[in-house]
Figure 1 (cartoon, rainbow, N blue to C red):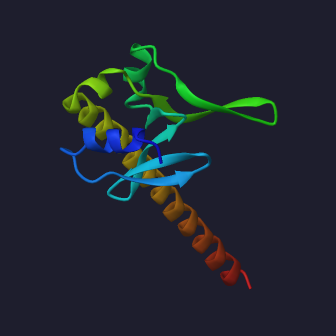
Figure 2 (figure 1 turned 60 degrees about the vertical axis):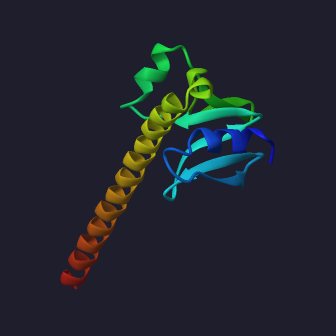
Figure 3 (figure 1 turned 30 degrees about the vertical axis):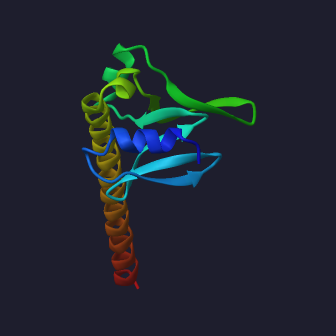
Length: 131
């Protein structure tokens, strides 16, 4: 692990514990069990969704992309603004926003799983009743 990840963790000390886990040639950054950022090639990318993405766009920031089978794939992680590295207060503000986006995504996935289970259960009951 490079010195960059401990530097980011130190910036976020006022927010709480941030752990790093290796993933796909980089690291995922986690807070309270949710991945809210990735570090690739000494660059920090923060989780974005429809709610907080406009703030990234307004600053001209860009999403993390990679090539897959000749196509560029964009993830919902956007480059962090330079202010994050100059001011721990800004670092925490942006990290919280990214964590909130991760939490919203996690909740949406859990709700979708519950709906799918309910539909499956309804189908099973109907199929059983039709016998």
